[in-house]
Image 1 (cartoon, rainbow, N blue to C red):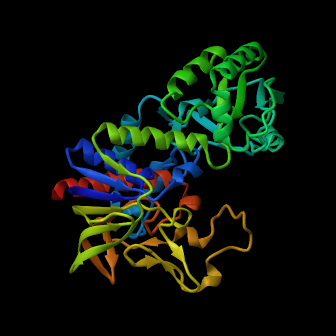
Image 2 (spheres, rainbow, N blue to C red):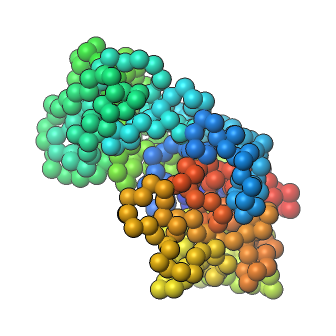
Image 3 (cartoon, rainbow, N blue to C red):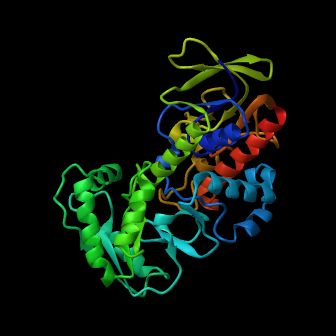
Length: 404
């Protein structure tokens, strides 16, 4: 079977690109080797350092930067289209909301937020942090202390409130917690308890546990009613329920629009005709997969899009050109938790001005690159990992659509 476009990687950039192409009437397939980087994310989108992101983008002068190639008006279109695709469970921040991280830090920089995490900027007098017996994969006391030190929540009392449900030893990860709490009998008890304590607090925080599947909207509405609108989720450690929730929604949108999604299907190479990629080799597939265009959206080191070797960094599928520092001693900072960001997080695949991949210094005619694997930006330092993913995938969809 031959496709209009085949996408390698089923994360934020790959799914968004696939949805956009399917909505444009193109026949696509996504090949994914496993879990995407969304499972490591908060499920919110940072465009570029906060609500004033537009001003920041306009100051970028580095020609290699993805945003320099895309331009401001296209980034805005990409963000609006992404929210339209996702639906009403996402909202634009515009400086009106903040979220809370597991250590109690207040984040005002996410521009597109899941409703269950968005805290309105106003005065509060007291908040509860729900603690679930048997679930230890959340730093409750650190979170409480962090919120009490923050400018937004520092003048209110934070109470850790134990939720009276039976102890379950298997609540080792956020997904386990979600699966347990959303069982009908347990869920009813949770709603009753929250409805009883909600009048005592302005806000009720909890480690994210609302379903990561299609039940989310229904369960969020029930929780909103029980808590009188006071309940807010805090994304936990990976695997993040909130991140998996975003992944589920995007997968559903892609399939609803007629796309082909092949999971556990790693791409291992390709067939070439000069500077043109003709077909892909997929592990355990008998025949090559042909397409007019291809897109690489495999992420960075965490998802295997880039591989570090003793003295080099490589893109493992096609051996594309990678922008990295040859001196390995400069790859990292002395402090592991360096929020300025280690240099290796800025490594990525080189592209031309239209995001076509470079191989041996020349653009591949029909292979585009989108998402975190792109070179020229630093996602942690610039706070724009999600923004680059949705903007670059939108831009690549436009280029492929024009050429088909």
